[in-house]
Length: 435
Image 1: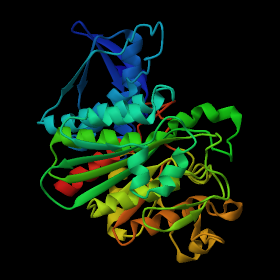
Image 2: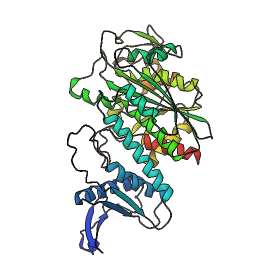
Image 3: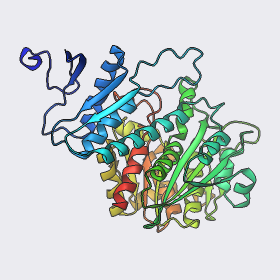
Image 4: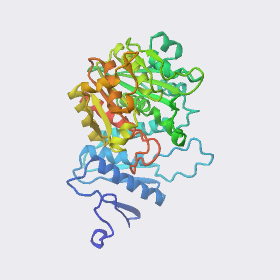
C-alpha cells in the first residue's frame, strides 16, 4: 500500500515508516536494482539509521533483500555503524545518543561472515576517526604510540627521538626537531603465517602548523587531521589481526608534530635520509614526504616485500579530485590494480595518476640530491610521489594521497570531521590477498 500510494519510493535513500505487528517498519529506497551495490547499500543504511535515531529506536533489525550478495550484506552493516558514529570525548554534556544500541541482520541465507567483516571494518574505521578527531594536545605522537601498543594480536616496537636519529633518519628527525613533544616511529607486526610481508606505511603528523612555511590561520585547527594515514594504517592492522586473516603485515607509522620554534627545520636546510639521499628543504610545509621517505626505507629494511603508503600529503589532490577519489600512484601495475579493486569494493575509491620520469626533473636539487617541493608547486601531488618512489626503490609500491578524503567526506555515513578513510580498503586488500 505504501508503494501504491507513493509514500514509499524506490529512489535511493527515500524513507517511509509503517506500523505492523506492534513494530515500526522503516522502508528505504535502494535505487535501481541493476545499480544497487555496496556503496548504495551504505548510503541507504545511513538514511535508515538517521530515521531510526529520530524515532528513538532501541533496536534496529535489517531485513535483507532476497538473494543479496554478501558484499551488500556487509556494506549495510558498515553504513549503519559508520553513520551511528559520534565523537563526544570532550563534551561536558554529550547529550543522549539516540542511535539504536542493538543491530540485528535477518537474511534468507548465511551472511554471518560478511556481517562480521562489515562490523570489524566499520568499528576499526570509527576508532581511526576517534584518533583523528581528538585534539592535538591530547593526541600527541606518544599517545598514538600508546594506542598502537594496545592493539591485540600485534607486536609493536616504538622508537623515540634518540633511536630515530641514531638510525640515520635525518628527514624524519628534521620535521620533529621543532617540537618539544618527541616523535615516535611505530613498527607493528602481524604474522598470519602466509604470503609476502606487506608493508603499510602511514603518515601521522599529529599537528601540522606548516613550520616556517606557515599555513593560513583560518583553517589551521583542522591540521590535527594530518595523521589520517597513520591512524588508518594502525587500526586496519588491528582489524586484520582481529579477523585472523592469513597474511603477514609490517606496519610503519611516523608520528610527529610540525611546529615553529628556534630549533625547527628551516627553508634551505639540507637533510640526509636513512637511504643516504639528501633532500633540500625549500618548503617546511612539504613535511609529510620527509617523514615517509625514512619510513619507507625502514619498512624495506625490516623486510617488506610489497608497500602501500597512505598520507594526507598535498593540497593539489584536493584541487584535482575534491572528496570523491584519493590519488593512487605506484611503480607496479598489478599491485596498483589490486589497490584500485579494493577501493571499488569498499567505496573508498582511488584514481591512478601518472608517474612519468619527466616529473623527476621537477624535484632535482640544486644543492642536494632532491628538493622536497617543486618550484611553483607544479604537479604537486605527482612530484611528491616521484620523491617517495626513490625510497620504495624496486619493491612493488602504491602511494595513496588521501588529503581530500580523510576528513569532511560529505557522505551520509561520514559527513564532517574525520572519516577513517583507508581502513576498510586496507582490510579488503588483505582479505583479497589471503583468499
